[in-house]
Length: 400
Image (cartoon, rainbow, N blue to C red; front, side):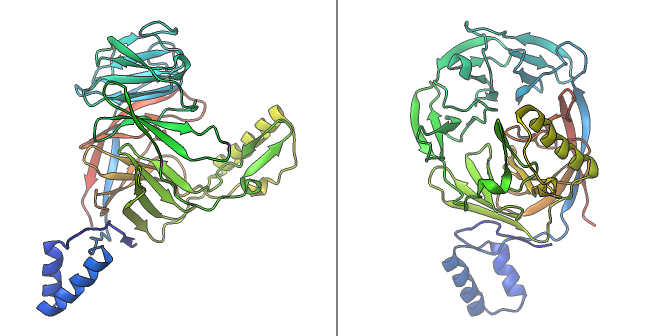
């Protein structure tokens, strides 16, 4: 295994100079090598041939098939609060539900409506720098702010940017609220725009997110045309283009483990992560059968159309998500065969630290794992089952 591209640095590290000297290279030789590195803009990156193995061990699970506060519908937002309690935004119920560090239900706040503190159609929740809970409610054209205890504080009128899926808003390093998924009214312009607001919700600016500049894939390769609509072929390997919670865009070619991190909004390359020899995971027979059944179900609803089921890939897209934790470590989620979840964990400068595995399925998309030190809180959901909130401990195993 080779890991490369641990980021570009302006100056070589002292240990790299000593390594060259230890190898018997003279002072003039060292200077020549370092000059080449400085001109190229990149110093040698640390490589780890045998990364640590981290086991994600469940400590606490919140969720139930029964009615009640633990019987979640669609979890649109999750916040792990500073006191260890957990706030869950249940979109169908229009409620924020609070649980203590032991998983006991404390209270539920809000309800369906358009009045102060009520929610019409919430799509996401994020904690501000001061711990306040910001809930995106495009149905009411506003963002509502709640205290960590659940007390309603205020609301800000914000016209929806045209995105009705799960909200991926976040607070950047300057404390600005970044609203994602704002699209142009021009059908030919598919670029994503990000609205940035200050603490008082005055709009600072709107920036165009940097593009990965990937070649477009013809729709005929991945779209199934139906009499009354269309659908994408399950498990089709698209270009990888994802946002993290720190204001970056990550790009990669289909099924290629070479991730480029672009800064918002200028698009400068900040980091490149690469692992060679990593291949896409195979679908299990059960997963493939479920994909076939998914296509048949949509056809029953939207009309039959000729389709060769062999066009469904035998493997999963290699990369699934990129997240950043409280220590700025980078968690790259990769697809695996069978149950469970796997991440490759890199340091902030791109060194490959560990591979972390959890025996349970973690929900992805805009739901990033919340990692603090040696603990994480995630949403775990299986098809057809009620979502659960899982708090887990990250156990480290020594390198062999």
